Picture (tube, rainbow, N blue to C red):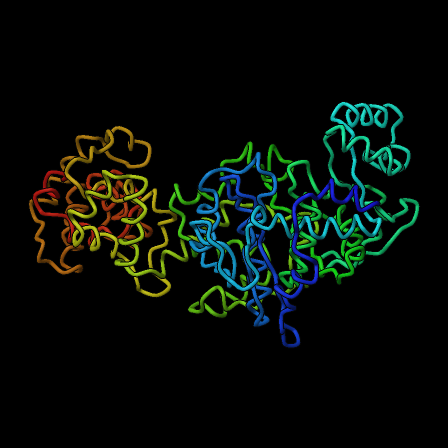
Length: 546
């Protein structure tokens, strides 16, 4: 390629490759230390799979004493959304995934290898693209969209591999004179990599997660620099992973097919490629079939869904670690008090075949355990912070009656293995404790006729009978004796043993009577400890219920 062509393609002064390499010296790493990254696009949407991937990369780096960094890949300016970097940064930090270097919520880079926003590194990519051009490893392509569309149609019609290669790489063989003519005429161009590969040959990729993968070489002359002067993902990631010292890249298996190309780019640029590990993306069951968790069809694909529902951040992290390594659950059972980030994650145990199935039932089970370990004050603050953002009227109620609500949340809490495990997410708390407030409307008692062996009228009478003898100062034993009195008065056994020994003598057991009182007070047949509920609820409100 003549100097005149290169000057026309790159008319503005660029830093030299040696200047760039001096600015980004190799990291001084000790043996075993790893450098990983998470590199989302600023689309305004953070996929839960992005948190899943970031968690893997963060653990790999920090468990080795290495570096984990955040890079914003915004070279596709059409997809860029205002404020998206805040979504990315907030999403990671909210789940305790902190980057040592990267981009903060305001879009500012921090760390010695910045900028960590690709659109701000335009001249760097152009300098390396120019180097490839000078070495004959790249060339300008003038094919219009119509030309490429016709190419695709021909390939489809002839059942050929799609792509710009071989006889379809029309601009690869243009002479310098033809190139000069097009450039002087102002014809639009992109820069393509001149692939040295042969699709008939095969190569072995050593994948960190999938093991050895036998694949054909890439012979695609891919675009490395677009018409706007920004690089494509393929080229930008190679340049950045080299300059930022990335040692291990962990990403979804949709990128496996690109590895031969990526390795070619590293070789062409004279660099050592990082080690790649590809995991199967998150799946979900749809009519009995597994499919990829989709941002288009599945609300839970968006991390914001979990914020809106109020899932505790610790619960989601524990759940994702459980998906990443099946041994996490055993580790948690043996280390109930340890922070989840102390779990020693292993490459060899990362799920990488069929794809982890996102299972809400398992998430809910883990979330119950997480909430059960929290104090009433911690739950109160978590619910309040959630409500301030998503349920303002409930937040006002929480703030106005902090002591009362905290005492409600403290029922059956912090009592070891018997601690209550009914709370899953903060969105549910308002309805869960609604019966403690005067504006709650109890469901129609007729709705319980299939669950309780008494009529609506008798339910009301049992409530009145109990209220007539109720004393808030009673201890639990005295309180229970009064429940027994009501049971006997209405023909129910005063204890389960008596009922089991002679069920024909009774209409039911003490359990039925307790459930009648429970329904009158709470509107449900299952609740936390009824004695504690009555102790906390104001006596005038309790009298109204009963």
